[in-house]
Image (cartoon, rainbow, N blue to C red; front, side, top):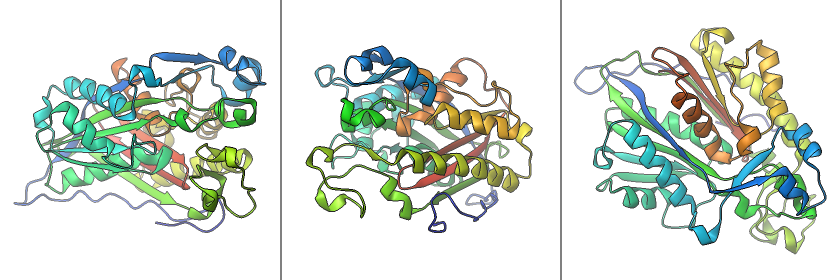
Length: 357
């Protein structure tokens, strides 16, 4: 659905989730039964960036909260599909399944290795899922949250039993690691995260509330031009900008801060619960200051709103599943917990997915 033309200014409320009844009258839920993640081998610190451009560790840390990030290397074969496959293998194993049990593969990515084949098809082939359906969804940093909502409803609808959902991006292929591109170069890292969603007879498991929004009028604030025609009015064409992330930092920051709080409020209202009723807020990691502002706004303790941007940077669609896999494997996500997944990004897009796990 679309919001009003102003960046981040929308009033549409998230619709409450109605638990559908499957064919034959039986009810079932959806369980997050496994998770996994993968990051490139090469670690790039702020000190390393000081050698590449005019910046400092202190400047980056104070403004973003980022200290290190991981970046892909061509000579190591670290493609988007390979990172996605590694994360998927871990998630499928964690779920106690074999690849042949997977009915559908959905990948959130804005950096596929090629226009076609899709990342999802490459992952399906590498895993050996035996002709499972496969599709990619591009909603930038919101992609994984969008995919969680789509996959949940496909399972609830009765068509699928085991769906593999992946967020994977190699965004640094579109980053200019020079002084000219430093405003964006300091922000991003590469990675992949995955979860396995499974049908269960326990209909208390699954989505409690969800929302997905967009505002294309704000696309001009965050984009990657492929040609001169892709430059919006007001942005001067320069050949060296082709293929690299272009961002109006102040506009994107304002959009994120305002949208983030409203999105949490809308999702809580749809679910009929308060901020402290949620056990974990698993948020897109774009800027530590944005996360801290939301934490203060809702009076949340650090153990409820998780931050790992200091170690990974902004990994786009991989951001949310990387956080979730980290806290899940640490034993912090337990049976009966409520987990809210939240993201916002280019497009502009934003969305939420509140689960009973």
